[in-house]
Length: 185
Image (cartoon, rainbow, N blue to C red; front, side):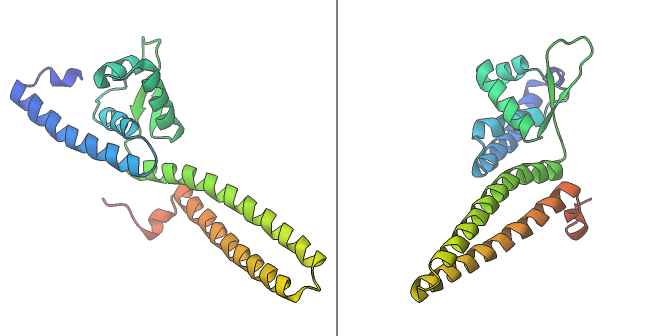
């Protein structure tokens, strides 16, 4: 945070207070989505950096161990919220925030939703196959057949939802969502 060195003590304190509020808010917000608040704070701190940083620099800034910092950076990198960048004369990995919050949101939810959708579609398809087999085996049992048909219908409706969610995810990944809900200028 070399840019702070040129500021007066009063300027530095006031600037850091405003940043701390935003960083705390980011931490709380990410915690709502299953990302630890410490990783949210890491992202928030990186967001205000003027230049790419190393693990060591962020570890020192945040008072976290290098292992915890590495885990946090890896999480943010996997969520496409930060990038590794090349730095002239540096042998260490440098990281910078992807500053496009729209893209961060799209990437984050696409990654999370995609995992859930694939898992749930797989479970539903398997369940439907098992119900089909049970229907063949027990076609003479009218009461049981009624339950099997009902369950199969519910699973098929759920599959329709997940197919719709697939399309929603694709609209985030392609950016098509912004045709319907434009970004603010």
